[in-house]
Length: 570
Image (cartoon, rainbow, N blue to C red; front, top):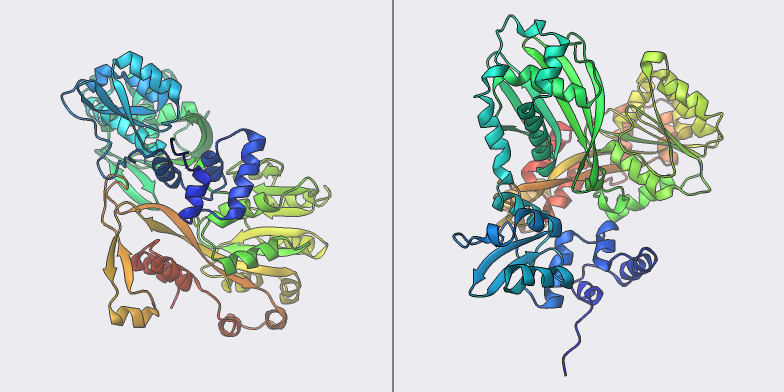
């Protein structure tokens, strides 16, 4: 008698990837929404796509193929591209790997899709030997095999041959509006801009910088917080490229003397992505910066952001308080707004009236009233906050405390029964208190309203496919108080683009304002006194939080030190 197949949930339990409670929760959601268990667990942030695929490989007793290990490279000289056309491979998310006699090995995202397997069998006249791979790996392998990887390179190379776009240097600034529009709508320019965007999204870039210089254009992608150059197109295409981006984002094409801001929307692999555009005139032409906001790539779940259990408990206690002020500090791009979004996502309910005022609104959150400020017409943070207080709010999020008026209204709201969440630009959590006093707030008001202040940074994650272990030296272990004998370092592979890192995770220091701190703040104690008192609480600083991530094999000592030393850690 044939042995029954082990259930996916049981395999995940055995591997220690889920708990009984998490599995039960996912099964309940699965039944209500009609989704698959693996998909539900991924959406909940409990497991990764790779975890599910490896578990399915064990369940189905078929091989798992990883792109990083070179297992998704189709055999050469077998006419596999003719056997399985590109549109069919993309539509069904599969890739032919090799053919032997009448047996065809094919990598599937979903090897349980029997209809697709049967159709493929009839189309190729081959028996199908399925293997399994993640959607991310398959997408990259399909692009590489069917030639999409070379499209941007070819478009950039071709740009140097487009003679019709070449103009005299002294004429460039005098191009008419009709000329600019005509050049921007030319097929080569449209294709080039599209490919620059698509490549950036595929490479998980958060920003694109298009920078004009005297004899060239620089194009750089910011990936995991680091800027990387890509081969640039011809310099004479700059006006057309900038105009094309302006057309997409509804900006004034003729205005090249003043900065402009805009936004447009693209859809890639059924995912909606917002592109925020900023232009600035430089001495060599307009510089364009594009911020890529992919909501699906950003976890809005507190458990997925990087908090340790102890830190997470502190945060949850604070955000479930009925009133008070919560502040997050850190530089631009450190993930403060994402953390606040995740907090609001956790505490929102039909019983709570939640409003946010932001500049700009980065992600749209269901069930939350979000307001975009418009300084050019006098609608500021302070103005929005005054309006909110007449709207019967329970919880208010303010994008940033920038001035005394905004700070005063935040304090007043927190003292009159509202929970207020906001951000400040300071190097560490204790410095937030000094900053509020510098802005002009009275110390006794700060001590009465502030319930929690945190600082955060983003550090790069080591690539899970290629990270290498090494032994800690006794001197390093002693200096940094590291207990783990084995740490990890980056190596580089195809999966991480040979950087050794893939993705980022947050590190935090969280200070809960207790009675001892309130007393110090109220009497106007110096920042040094406040920091000395906090040390008595054995607070986990940004440095300690980062070192723990290094001990867990998530990041490197060098990455932690580069971030926390900048943050002013000792």
